[in-house]
Length: 388
Ligand code: MG
Image 1 (tube, protein in one colour):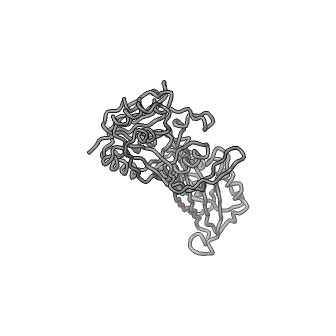
Image 2: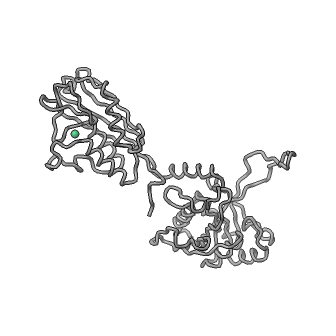
Image 3: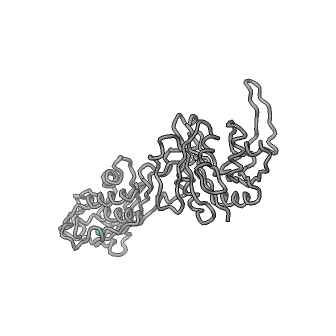
């Protein structure tokens, strides 16, 4: 099996991204370059033996890396031009073959890397290309003319080569090449084209970053939904508290160890369930005297803190309370307000509530019990999570 060094060129200045150095922009908790580094690591068993990261001077200490990854990370210093940076990366690499990749292409797929490795074993040089999809025009001042797109392809990275040959052609060619393939072709060497990937786009403009953020959320679990349920008996001589609101005109209240606010309980269980955490019966056991008469809105607040501690935020909660008596509709707006204040301290309204009668059926229909179901959707906030 041929062994490859995966060289990530991250030395650029990001002039089209408003001066921000795009290779370090955060994408779901990782700097942009790390995404392709992790892709390379995932192919450790298929021939990628190391990642070489070419960084601007002084950046080496600031970049995160998982030291227990199955391939090492080597750092090289960037040069004035792309070809200088690439050469430095090649000289720092250990294997006979290299893949040279733009740091700003976070989504090169595993299949693409495997295609390139296979093609390189046949020709010593291989690049990913895609046919131009849009109609082309040449615009020179006021003059516009059509350009035939037939036979035109866009070129992507990684570009894959026999290393010492690439070092030679880059040195021969001078430093003005836009990519390594240009130097390779200028030397008259054979180059194999493999099919590129549309998702392997280069983050160049601010809109590209928006696309990348949407994709990175889709690729990972970024939303989860949980379900909560609760039931309590309705008895005389107990206050009726729902969603933190005391229902003053009810002769009956919910029986329970805490204040028995079953709306708060069902919502807490929905949140905890979505985050994969134990339910409130486990977190706040009824056997623990500390929770006798507890304010369930405080328990809900604690559930929210635990959910946030796992990196989740509340996107939405929907709940339905089933009760024959009393009529609850007039209280729903105040319940929503109080619940939203706990679920999203940022103050967004993120709760919907409904009250349903039981149509005279079951314990609920006889006014002997109340039931609540709640569904909660959580999202991961890319800026709030730190990956290892
Ligand atoms: Mg309960």
